[in-house]
Length: 220
Image (cartoon, rainbow, N blue to C red; front, side, top):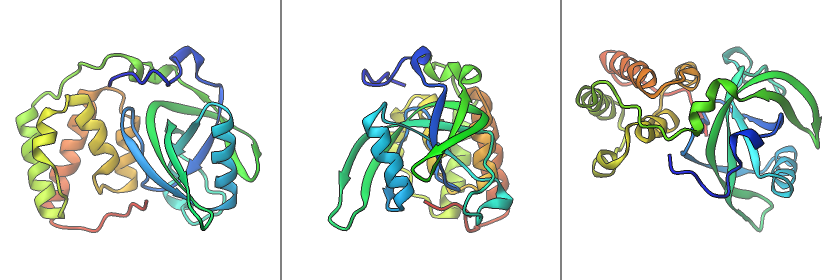
């Protein structure tokens, strides 16, 4: 991805970050995620992030704790930087989080203002900072699987734009926006390389297409 000059360098990423546990809401490096924030604890988180480094970690709850007010979280997520935001008259913040780098959670630390914070390790995903020229192993086959999946599941794909995207950007964008199940999305987040992630995604799309139309369990 093209490096945003406002983004911190890999070595400057913090050892602790705030987290926004939300099932199905996935950000990946270079991908934009729109968020509508209204809970007081998460408004506190956004204001604190804006006063510091603009960084917020997106992470999914585990599948069996989604309805828990303080759910158990997965051990891998992706940090994003607030790249735009606006305040609404009814007290919400509408913002865009742009994905920066994935992380592994090492421990949960003391929260602030009602929101949660974690200690993280970035090393395993240092490649998120590299100029990613890794390619999809069989792009025509991957695109064919995507066409079949999008037709069956009513997903609108701007095909002309998709053709222009580099492989890494295309795969990351689809990780965030395809209506795959939460566990499938988590598996994609945790898969380090573009080629391997594309292989996994193709397999998931082909299995979903073979099973016919289904409802996604994600939520934004």
